[in-house]
Image (cartoon, rainbow, N blue to C red; front, side, top):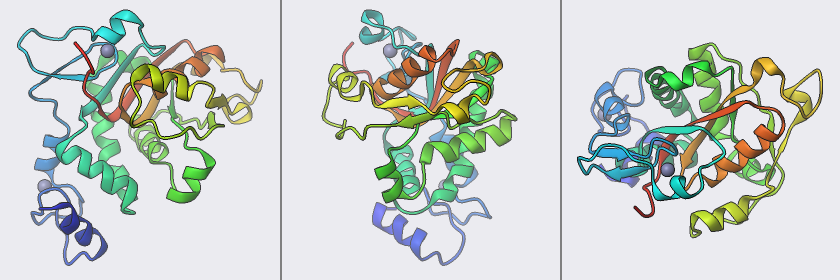
Length: 251
Ligand SMILES: [Zn+2]
Ligand SMILES: [Zn+2]
């Protein structure tokens, strides 16, 4: 099924059908089979640190060259799968075609991923990556915030909108990792009062283990910059979950 057809189905649903494969589905928007498939990283190995993918070589996981040279400020990032194919289309529909209720299925897949990775279990709070006021006005919702809220419900963890995006940086899509790091430097700030009722700008100890949630980790520059700000405010450790992540740029 092509993208246009899928979008038409979203806008003019005849009957309930899976957004990915088009099969008749019950109340769910993505059928069980497709849920399994988009939540799979089969055929890929990943960098144990940033979680970015490399087509499977049979040599197992190893750190990507960028994490070897300069490890990011977060401790570990994981995603449902590489940014491409059905996963990419589902993310597009979620963000741009008004199908925000997809946050329910996608948030559930992220919660499943959380449960599979023991490193995440210590997390004491979930923090979504914020949108700029301008993007928020255009899109009407923050895709990462809805995912964070869904995960919070399922995992019984508090969600804090404690980051603010103070600068709407130019598009990152054509930049390298280094370029993105420079581009995004200083774009986030701590949203004090929401974060810590007892002391603006500081992180309460009981919330010091942060799970950062975003939709896509491309080079990791955004997640790293958010982590830097959170660590500076007193966070102890940052783990990251995204829907998708990019491929390693070089080996
Ligand atoms: Zn399906
Ligand atoms: Zn890496």
